[in-house]
Every structure is written in structure tokens, then in C-alpha cells.
Amino acid sequence: MLRFPDHIRNNPRLRLHKLSLFSCNSAALMASKTFSSSFSLLPLTPSPKRLSTPCKRLVPYLSSKPYSKNHSLSLRTNGFSSIPSANVSAPVYSKELEDRPLNMRSLEILKHKLKQLGIDISACVPGRENRLLCPSCNGGESEEISLSLFINQDGSSASWMCFRAKCGWKGITKAFADGKPSYANLSRVNKVKVKREITVESLQLEPLCNQLIAYFAERMISAETLKRNAVMQKKSGEEIAIAFPYWRKGSLVNCKYRDIAKRFWQEKDTEKIFYGLDDIEDASDIIIVEGEIDKLAMEEAGFRNCVSVPDGAPPSVSSKEVPAEEQDTKYQYLWNCKEYLKKASRIILATDGDPPGQALAEELARRLGRERCWRVKWPKKNEVDHFKDANEVLMYLGPSVLKDVIENAELYPIRGLFNFRDFFDEIDRYYHRTLGYEFGVPTGWRALDGLYNVVPGELTVVTGVPNSGKSEWIDALLCNLNESVGWKFALCSMENKVRDHARKLLEKCIRKPFFDTSYGSSVERMSVEELEKGKKWLSDTFYLVRCENDSLPSIKWVLDLAKAAVLRHGGDWRIYGH
Image (tube, rainbow, N blue to C red):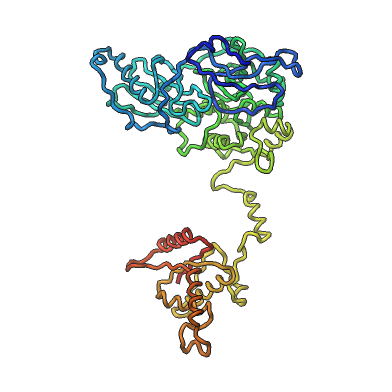
């Protein structure tokens, strides 16, 4: 039975949840790139099969340090990044509040406004960062304490931002702003922060225990690779967490922790940089992956020139332009490491194969320059699925296959710039004549077919002197094409009355005259039954584009109506005009 320490079990402010057990000999789990609150390892029963020392199993670890949790959770926004101010009513303040000192009065007003947004600041301290449960996303499934709230020392304003990638709700409100919260870019407030100086000793990091070394071994990560990358652990009482130190020029800059439930957290107020940054110093080729374990997996395949992003992947590609360096908060680690990146002539993006991973690759390419980026295509796992990341490929296919995947990375696509290999499939279909009408459709006249065929997508212009039979020839061509391949047509013929045009088409289709006239010579006039059958053919084969008023039509007007005919009636349509 799992048992938490007394300071956690007896703390009424903490909500504990059921935890699933993890066995040392169970199948290895894939690492997630989302961030959450603190978690670590809790010792359970020993595992005599695998290890000589007691087996410690990874379970969520809740920090013993006090933190503020927001209990005002009635407000939900389904992930929207702002809340309409119209929903926030202007507060009415008592005379007692007006008599208080200005800073106390500001803080009370601010408290009232934030409470209407679902943010309770009763336990918050002005002048420093406070962590709360985000009322917009409620911390996701893990109820992560992801909302960062900063209140000015004088209580005049407050700014907040949710650091969950799928939420990102942020805003600013002031105590005196016409009774309504005002929203702005969070980067304008508290933009300059003092970075903490940390050391291995101050964080109380330790070498990995045998149980964690065995856990990494199941993921095909060797003890030598762990040691070279200084992967460590951190204890808190009887609890243990995996620690990934972030180094730059031999100095500890940041440290990221994880538990076996795939939850991550980092040291507060530290600089964001790439994991493994020193391994790409002066490198001309760089590999970027999405997680620390993927970076370790790359080393097992022989690639040390690899770094991992610190903050995981976004849910989708942003539709906005890339912001300025000082405002690009989500990707600040890129700008903090730009001295390392500018030396690289080739950057291989080996992010996860899922949609967020591909979105991350696109966001990185937008900032690094697509012209020097390559991308990795992970091999197939089965007929439908592909392997997700570097560590999966290493575990299931081995280091040699992972090495081949990286060495066969493709050029990152640039809109408007192509190679012939991008069209090899189409060229093959053209060679085997499986595209469709690549050689055109016969006209129906053998003497003409050697000189001219009707090819979809091409424009045919028939010219000649007036009354030379251009319209008659085109009408006959349309009838032949409908009979041979079933094409349908939108007709724009301004010079013909509808009844006259119908008569000409019917005569060509039925091959009998519409009237008893001299041009029919000895051929009998079409019967009523043949007329009715012909009318159905007209209705099924043609739509008419005609001007219904005295204004002159334009080319755009004709094409718009032809497009409407295709969308409304479907089928394989062509447009012909006389």
C-alpha cells in the first residue's frame, strides 16, 4: 500500500489522487513532454529478480514547500486565451475601503477583480511570483499548478500567465482602470527577472541509484551515457526524483525533474537553455529532439551533437508572425543559445512524430531558417502507425536503425522550392499512363485526332472568320466528348437563343432534323419520343451561363458561375463559350 509522508497526508490543502504502481520489470513507458507539478520516487517492495537493493518505484511526489492553490474554480473558458471583460461587473466599494491607505485599497480592489475572473489571491504575496491553479484549464488532467501570478508591491496591478502549452491564458488587470480589468501582453510586466544561481550542492543532487540505472537500461540507455551527461537524482526524505541538469560551459544553469508518470518540472527563476548545450559548441551539424531521454538515445546511436528543447511542444503551429526576440517567451531558449546555433550550417529536426511534435519542428524552422533545416521521418511501426521518437526507435529497432534514420534526414520543405524527387510518383504514373487523360481525349474525328486531342486543364481557342462554323464545330465536339467519356459542360453562348442552341445540340445528338426543312433532305424529322429523350440528355449534360440583364458580363463573372455549377452539381465539368 502506498503511503505518503506525514507532512503531506496531514496537509488539508493538498488533494491526493489514486496512483498506479510501476514495476521495475514492466515495459518501458515513453516520455511525455508536458510540464506538471513536483513528482518523485517512493520506495516500495524489493524486486529480488532484478536488483540486489530495494526497488524504488516512481510515483507522484508533492513538494513539502507551501504553495497557494486557487479554489475559485467556477470559471471555465475551454482554453480561450482571454475572458471578455463584459462578463466582469464594475465593483461597488464601501466607505470603509475608501478610508484605507492607498496600497491597501488597491490590493482589495485588485482582489475583488481577480476573484471575478476565478483567481483567488487570499494566500498570495505581492512583489513575487505566486503559483495557482489556472481557472481557464484547471491544470489539465493532472491538475497542474501552472498559473504564474505576479502582484505589484503596491497592489496597483496584477499579471498572470498559464504555462501549460494547451492553455496559455494570460492577462493584466489594474486596480484603478474604470472598474474593469484590462488585458495586455504579459511581456510588458515583470519582463526582467533575476536568474537564480544554482549548483549541484545547493540542489542536493546525487548520483543515480541502481534502480534508476536499471530503469534507463530498459530504455537502452547505458550507465556510461548517463554518467557523461551527469544525469542525477534528488531526494526529499524517502522520495527520489530523476534530475536532468542543464549545463553551459560547465556551469549549472537549470535542472529539470521527472517521474515515471511522465510528468516534468523545473527549477524556478532559472534561465531556459537547450539540454546538452555544451555538446553542440562549434558544431556545424546539430540535432534537435523533444526530450532529454531522446537526446540520450541519440548518443547511444553515436550522435553527441544533439540537444533537447526544455519546454516540450506546442499543440499547433501559430498563425501569427514570429514575434521579436524579447517577446518570444515560449522559445526564449533559442535566443539564449543563439551564439551556439548561428555556427550551425545543418540543423536536423528530430522532434516527435505526433502533431505537437511536427508543430514544434515548424516553429523551430521558422526561427532557425528553413534553408538550413532537415527533418526526420520516423520508420513505420506497422501498416498504420510510425514510431514516435528517437528512444522508441532505439528500444525496438536498435542503434543502427536510429543512426540510419538520422543520416537519411530530408531537406525541410520550403514553399515554392522543389526537387524532381518530389514529383517522382507523378512521373511514374505519367509513364504508366495511370493519371487519367494525360494524352487527351479523342475528338471523335479520326482525321483530326492525330493533330489535336482535348486535354483537361488546357485552354483551346477556336478562331475563324464570321459564319465559318466555329460554334457548330464546338457543339459537335461537345456531343462527341459526352458520348465517348461522359463529360458534362457549362455553356456560355451569348449569341444563341436558348431554343436555337437546344435545337442544334439535339440534332447533333439524335442525328435527325428538328424541323421538316430542306437541310434535312430525306431524313425523317425527330419524333416526340426522341425529343423527350433528347431533352433529358440536355438537362443531364449541360448547364447554361447566361446574362439575365442588359449589363455586359466579364470573364470573372463567367468563371464564377462555372465554379458554382461544379460545386452545386458535381461531376466532371468543362466550360465552353461561343
